[in-house]
Structures are given as C-alpha cells and as structure tokens.
Image (cartoon, rainbow, N blue to C red; front, side, top):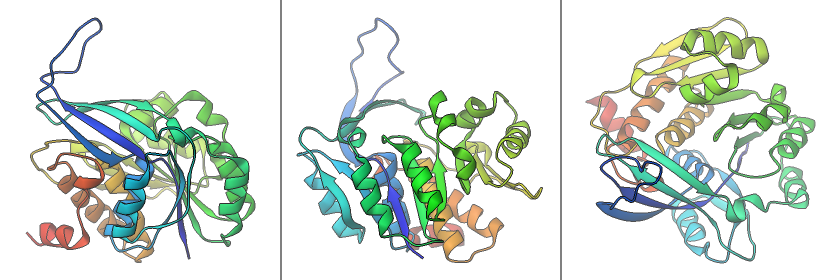
Length: 296
C-alpha cells in the first residue's frame, strides 16, 4: 500500500507579535523566522518522521529547491513534485505570546497543478492506496474524482475551508481529519457531538477525526462508534503545524495497525510536542521523541 500526499509546499514567514494586527493598525513584530511549511509538506514530513514511506506530489516555483533538499533528507519521495515558473506558495503567520496564530496564504505554484499532472500521479496508484489531500491546492475535485475511480482510499483535511469545497464530491472521502472551526463551517453546528452527528448524516460512509486543540480529539464513524482522547497538557509556543502533525501521526498509527485509542493518543502526543517549538515542519517530532514523551 502506497501513501501519496498531493499537497501544498509553502515558505512560512512567521512573525512574533504582541497581538494580531487589527484593521488599520501598523504593528512592529518582535521577531521573524522563515521556515518550510504548507499543510501538504508538513503532513509528508510528519508521516516520514512517524516511520511511514510517503510520496509527495505537488508544485513548487523556481525558488523551491529547499523543499526538495529537505524531502531528500527526510526520505520523502519527490518524483511527482514539479517546478514551474514563478514563486512557490507562501504564508504570512502571526504568532502571539499564547502561541495562537493567524495565517495569510499566497497560493503561488500550489495553484498551478494541471489535469495532466494529476493523471500521471494517479496512474501510478493501485486500488487500496491512500491519497492524502488538503485544500491549499487547485483541482481538488478532479483529484477526488480520479482517486475514487481508481478505488483509492481518500483522506482529506478540508483546510482552509471554503463553501465550494462541498461541491468536490466529498461523499467519496474515506476519512475526514478536521478541527473544530472547520467542523462548524461544514455543519453550522457548534458542539462537538452535534458536529459529528451532522457530518455522519452528510457522509454516512466516512470516518471522522475531530480535533479540538487543548480540549482533545473525537473519533466517529457511520457505524455509531465514538471515541474521545484528551489532549496532552504542554506550554504552547507556536501552534503552527500542530494539526498537520496530528494528521501524519494518525495515518501512521493506522497503517501500523495500532488500535484507535492508542493511535489517537499517540497523534495527540505528537501534536503536543509540535506546539512546544516555533515553526512548521521544523517543529514536527520524530517517532523516538514521541515514544520518550509518552513514556514519561
């Protein structure tokens, strides 16, 4: 079984601020760091550091060589990463003293994937392979449709959420990995139990993992199974990539055959470690670090 992650690759410009910038305000930052990130790239790094071979597909600009270097270092297959004229995607991230963030995205090369590229990638897949997707790239509907036709198992993190995403054939998705905000946007519900019930009615054949930050995580499926695992208490420095870390470690645990309760706990631990460091991909822990954290 192969894992193909067709996803974004962004340069992250992370500014340390006293508070998020208000309309009309000019605010001096306390620091600036530049990291490699993007939901897709982060999730590939998380999978690789959790011990799962992953092949990344996507697009970078002429400035994207650093991504390829890091992928090689992490053992991520880049045979389907293409380079196009212009700039790679990037994100402007504000992080406040509580570790909370807000993010402004520029799609860049991430919005220049082509139908031909999608066909090439999917032609190398077989029934049962996993296709991991996020909503920071273009042609998501085409990817979901093509993967479904080939009987791939589709895993979607619908972030950032937008209304048109609901028209992308989401009934074909096997597993949704969503946070509380995305759950509310998709269902117009506010309580976790209500969100999960609404999602179950919308997509009865799917599984759902609803992350709630410091409040923990819920799992639900169309058969009525519900699980809850509390978050691991840590001092948050930067929450960027916490959800992506959770996604990578959740899929890794699933592929490694771990029981649901155990893999949820391990994914929570990995995400907790990620928020104790600044940056996106750079903050994602290795499996040995997660093991040591859990043993404590």
